[in-house]
Image (cartoon, rainbow, N blue to C red):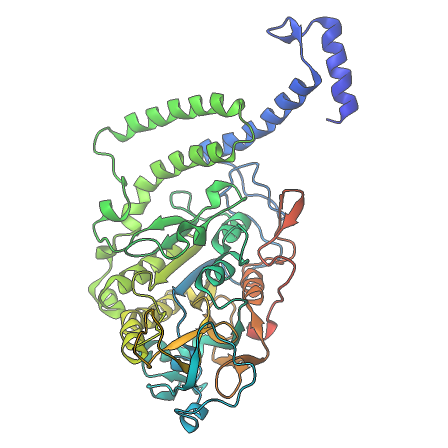
Length: 498
């Protein structure tokens, strides 16, 4: 209703005596407030009932109805789900997927590289302590510490020319996970669920699994920021194996399901009344939805997270340990319609190996390699790899040179690498990705990306494209402007598309 219409209605109220309690007339401000409440209540109805229809395709998907209802993307999608294997701390590309034999030639010598910019004092060339070998029909070289992943290399597109902006963990974590280094912005998983909704109303659309506690920057890594709170990632501490510890309060032992439903119905009625007076309160809206989602999760979450239901040969295929367990859970979640699953590795013991890299990288790779290879093979044999994008990588890479001793982690040691945002490796598989290829390159020593450079914004733009979205049009109006995951940058790397 425009301002002229509001004025006409308020004038009529004054003439007829209609208004608050049927006696006092409504002011123009009250009329606008009450009109806004009506629209907000439509959103609340969708949240508490969960039966709204799917939304039509739009440049900016509406969240006025059920915010997690499945939606149609901008164009036909190649993928429906994402599994992000996040190697926290920055794995060394020259020790994993980007072999640099030239480092052996300069071992112990300063590299002939101009502007060798690093976060700390960097010394001589440090050849990889690991052997590389060619694998698959593509003949892509992979380090010996990833033998199981290497067997699936023909499904993988290795991007050896990724780069970020800053060689510090905090801003680089935010860039990789939220598309910006400094200000608060929604995470990738939040954007994906905002755009796509979810296929399973009994599970969160976005789940972040991180064993043993929160990583650096904590829940900001899966925040919804200014997007509605329903799109926030749901954190699960996968160090636990018992379902009731893994998903707290997943079962209610105090009341029956019917009684619990009656309690929630009463709570919903009270919340509606409370929300009517606070139509702009996003936190309240998110809280109302979380009550409903928690109730629905009791139906399905226990089953989804219980890997004991898997046959023994599947458990053997993934292997033992917390990484194997959470990677298997990721397959079970996408199988049940969850849109975005982020798996953290290295929150407690990160890939941030400033010293003892030969021992530490081998140990870390052993914790996850078998399960990563199993995940790709398992998704493929179940027909899920074609609709699931698997993204592997950290927030940056590591230098091809040794880091000189400091007062910190590598005091007295000369056997590790510093942070390197100028060039590193990520890889993608499944969901419309053209596997069995290497895209881009770092220089002959692995210091910086020099060929077909791929910024983190480009990775995000390509990921959204595979999910059916034009990254420039998946926007949300906030603080007077339209925001998007890729800010004002990003390009789709079409060479990675099948």
